[in-house]
Image (cartoon, rainbow, N blue to C red; front, side):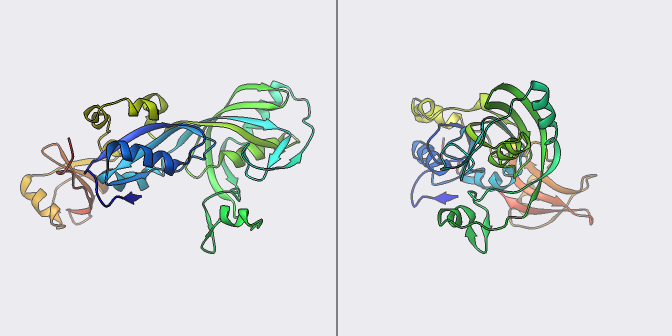
Amino acid sequence: MAKRKSGLDVHGIILLDKRQGVSSNQALQEVRRLLNANKAGHTGALDPLATGLLPLCFGEATKVSALMLDDNKRYQVTIRLGVMTDTGDAEGKVIAEMPVPEFSEQTLRDCLQHFMGEIDQVPPMYSALKHQGKKLYELAREGKTVDRPARRITIFELNLLDFGPDQLTLDVACSKGTYIRSLAEDIGHRLGCCGTVTALRRTASGQFDISQAYSLPQLQAMDSQTLLNRLIAVDVPLADMPLVDISTDQAACIKQGQQVAFVSPLSGAVRIYCQQAFLGLGEMLINGKLAPKKLFHLDSQTT
């Protein structure tokens, strides 16, 4: 998340269709300049090679960006078999080449079935995970390799869209923390060769779909008011969380960080509203009180 020294108080989410060849942070800064927003962040980076859905959070919406990191994702990926690179994708240096065995469609489907459900996955060296305080990709660029513990992920769907003698195109629905580059390498190894990602597109993230996203040229073509109208409200990503509606007197206390008595069958995390206005996140306690946890200050929204 980054904050400008000057700019407008803009609160909401823009769904960007990121183009290939730019980092997620570069894409974020391009849209932030269009909005002249003073605070911005994204919800999980896409590699420069990748395109597709990148939710961008501005102003108070940056407070939900961490929660959106936990969302399930969906990708369309093309894998070239018989080639391995140091990064796991076509932008890396080729470090191995192997002949690709002949396979039938049934062989491919049997292979993909092996990766369905909960599986253990070793993260790639070229990732932002840290080892002893240093990012793995920084170590990788120094020519170093370290042991990475496997992490439990879930593959919900793994659909074969197309294939050729040395290429696969897949539709992947997966949990947070899934590295598609690692999945591509593992599928290649399972087929008796190796594999690397040549194209990757994120098509969904949580409740958001690529059909809702705008390209940078589309956003650039909008006037200021139209661009502001494209902002998605900060509470939309929280729609699955139960809500409570409190009185104006209770809202005054909540805004001061005070707990209030509130009779409700709910427990745990809730969204707090007053007269349909979103105030923030709270927690229903076992003592019958509502405690504020994360308040949102949306009164200054630029329009």
